[in-house]
Image (tube, rainbow, N blue to C red):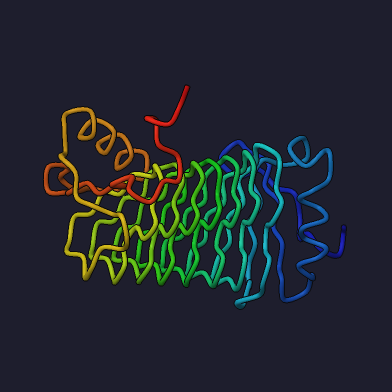
Length: 240
């Protein structure tokens, strides 16, 4: 541990641990972040020189803040619970995959499958997101400051996807009950995805999501998309 951290120093009245991944392995970093006393030791972890390494800050389960100063590779912040993870750069495939709670923010752009299968929490991508953003999302809120690639929200089951830019082909293909808010244009809608009215309750929901994400945009400029519910195998008329 001593070789991994430079020092525990006060930072704005908090205890901060600084980790240099040029000298420390990702496995050692994650082991320290998984320790039972991680929140007591420090509530702020600054990770330097990530250099696109994979699986940084995965499996966190404590109310701590992890700030990564640079670009990250695959699966950063996967399975996150309670922690706040900020990437001061871009992120590779599988960002915040299967996140349960907490917040993950990328100040650059993200590759494909960001927020895949995530059950909760807030994922903010200030730049663009590639293909399949929010694929099979199950309750997470995702706010993208730029555009998203094709098949975003594919098989989205619950949660909200907010896109301030444009969307690629097959947006919301085979969508269940996830809501999509899009400010720009969409190249094509996927199977069973339709545009729906943007009512007052949706404007309030969208206003709150944008505020939580810290992104300035006019909610009234967005359109809402959701499931036409024609692909459901269950029909209420068949219920007893």
